[in-house]
Image (cartoon, rainbow, N blue to C red):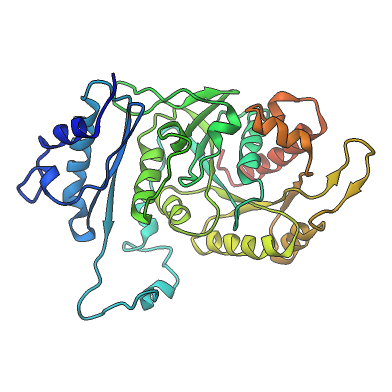
Length: 372
């Protein structure tokens, strides 16, 4: 049964708001996207009203789920604080408070909102300062390497704008809901896997503002039945923006893994990512140098296409562990594109051994910190 936008709007007319009018008349709804039974939209309110509207978000989600033909729903509550008249903000200029380091303790600290995910012993982030360094491929193979260490592992694809995990894992089905209306992660390769890409069409443009991204990530953490996990690996979007801060403020991260290629341009951005995690008191478990070198599959000649050793030298300079180097190899690329990551497709091969060695170092770091 095909679901239409009008059916969704009709269901939302029954949802009351704090403003005393139906949700559809409150001038807070974003455009409603409906694709193959998957529905997503946001409710946009001022930050001062956000708490009063959380129950509205839940009611809206329940109303849409009741529409025949709806298979999954993502309703994000986005809240933006309006600039005060006394302190107007010029376009393109952040308020002065934005440049001050955020406090890492105290009742008013954003970190005071952290809460453990039930059943999950440790959450770690795999991050990079820039895109195109192979972060998602690394995150998936790292998760599989941790699995091979005997750990119960989950993988959350938090790259809202460019989710790669559905393609890398070959997963095409949609998550189901449990009796509590929480999403059940999809099992693949012995991992519990969840991605925003399971809920939206692969070619759908994700034109979401920061608050909607933050709301979506929070829901992916909290509204998923992760079960019992030793480690939840979170594949972060590139950069040091809303998604990274949301994760750090939402759950007590046990560590972050930074992925970089050897050249200076990537390392500059990797430093920013490392500095951000340090500022919010997240331990850096180490740096991985991806695409470290190219080994010709025909003649065996090694070429340092992007230079070599940059991440190692950076780790030494910053005093953080160097976890290892992963080559640029056609088999890693081909297996990833086919939805069969190399640790799974060639478990006895040299590349799988590299990822498992890196995973062993991460496991040891987590054990040393009594995180697992």
